[in-house]
Length: 327
Image (tube, rainbow, N blue to C red; front, side, top):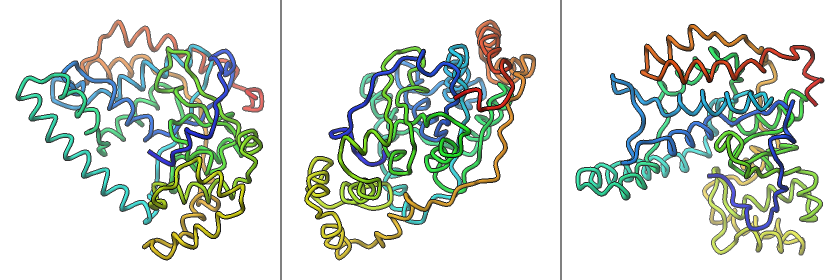
């Protein structure tokens, strides 16, 4: 979910052509949840193989990434590590929502209410260890590298951009801006065949809002993040006004009195996040035979469709020189 900044940040409109030849670091968990939520049957049930294993995420990874790669966009997936302790309350609330949604979904399915079933099914998506591991296996077979974060995937994705290993972060959450991502693209991995891409440059966002990144983080704390509840009645527009009046610290001091969290720790999550600096990025050669074995013979996908998708991965093997060539 992340911090809600939509009311004050204005995206630039870009096309896939603008990202041609670029490397993007993709928040894996964020994207997998999108795949699990949207790639479903008409009644809301996820795609499964004959053994009942969920395959919605595999469909998303294969077809949407092959589409991106065909457009000469190179993805690197970033998987979350250990979540900060401050995120435990948010995670607990999300589990409750998923469990309640799954209950309503099953009841609606039993009653034959397809529309209601699909609506609540989308809210019940959850990542299991099996889904995460099968995702990593498929990425490897496709030749797409992934990096294990020490903590939040978005922080690690932002670090890859800062370190020159990627051009932009692809994520649906605005938290990437608080984590210091220089460039953020929304809707890339989720709608790879559509043109509604949103592009944000951190320095431009800060200039337009007339604030510093530290002030943006403080605004996020007041609005509410995954690591703390914000102050009641304060949304993005009000927080921005407080920033311009120089009243952010004062309001955060007020919030601290009623908060069970150390808000300085929340600030440090965004400004001093512990990242993995010892990663290795290897672009592999797509293994067509093993892709077909894994996707078709193990999980029931169409051989013809998987073969076509694997042929679209050929751009991964072009320009294998220095990553500098991609900027």
